Image (tube, rainbow, N blue to C red; front, side):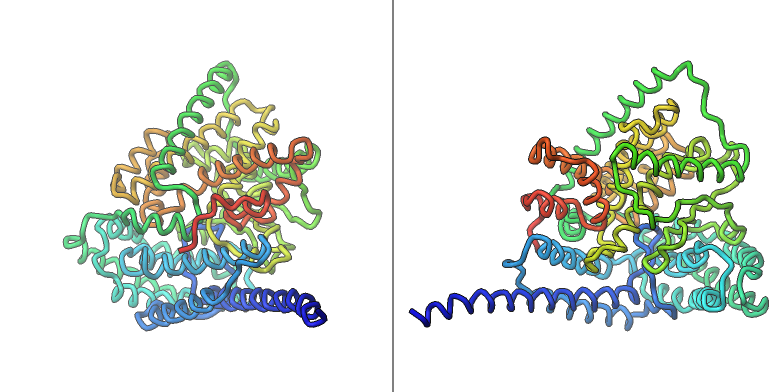
Length: 557
């Protein structure tokens, strides 16, 4: 009897020790993986997924890609050795997050290998790093100046590697890259000229590095022109690859057909609501554009403070006192001259004491779709990008006590929160004082719903790039240039455009089920605080943790 009692008391301890050992192994794997990822993750045109990276030269040579593949295989082996079945739900959520991160690397290297099928990928590996460095507000100290110079000097080697790697790049992708490189030498020259006073760099070293980068970009442009005649027309990635992304990276519980139906239903809803609003507001004077950049910036600053007060007053979301501000600034000449990428800065984990910055152009009647809306009323973009949107969510996530949840996994949660925030704030009454601002919100809803259809149909080969652009231009409606830019981004990066709408629908469903489960105990602020804090975690995993339901978490492959 004594022997069995001893075993009874010892076995749980042994089991706890074994579980602790497994969670330690996951923590070590996650730390090793994210340190590796900071060095090797490709730059992208998006802004939400930016990383704090160590400085230095990037390498996309065949040997470099082979090394990434070997490293990934080792991470996979370590991941598969871990058994999370006895863990708590939050720990199992962390396990699935690392699985998503590993699947994304498989997506980048093997399933959707843009490094060998899309020349725009190499523009992102050369010009985007420069843009990201320059979105951090100037002036630039010696360390930042040297890193900017390093990124400019890295352009020729990456483009040479890209020319060697590219194989049968689709003609539409080649055409888009050729167009993006038009006038690149003059753009770089003007960028360097306006940038130098903000750095510690000498005029000669910056000019010479920029000229070498321009030479390489023009050579790459000529190489793409040579490839154009023989380039295949097909851009679609195909159903199997697309489903791999949906199930293994984004962790969506939906098929492409279900996603398409969800988007179409939401588009109908957005059109109906916008119609009601326009009818209601037909005698209301139109919104005026900001008269100049200075008044635009001051208006945005005042309204950002009003939004923070609104969130607290109405019990919507807890605004921590340490959170800095979402601010607008005039577009610096060096960013304007370069004319590439997302010109904003959400800060980063080590810069939480700095304000977020969105650079804006001069207000005019020629502004594109989003800029025009923002110049009429900055609140819709503040709500989506700033507070309570991306900036707010990212800062909360970067301070998460669980290091695994501080990192970006997929845009479904991040963009879902940003989009959800727009209509949530509209329904809460933020835009009651501005009827035409409500129309802007409903028109944004039309766009995000249409993005779903365009994303799915481009990936499955049911839309060409030009058909997608025309479709967006006519059905949002929006200006042709913005529509084409959107279609290009969706075509080269399948799975991102649908994140706004599908993430939002997952959040509203989670809210409804939480309200039913908790009844009168449900608290909106507590719910939102959980979702925002865990805003890097795919919503299916959030639902598992918040409600104890894992029926929507795709089975791990």
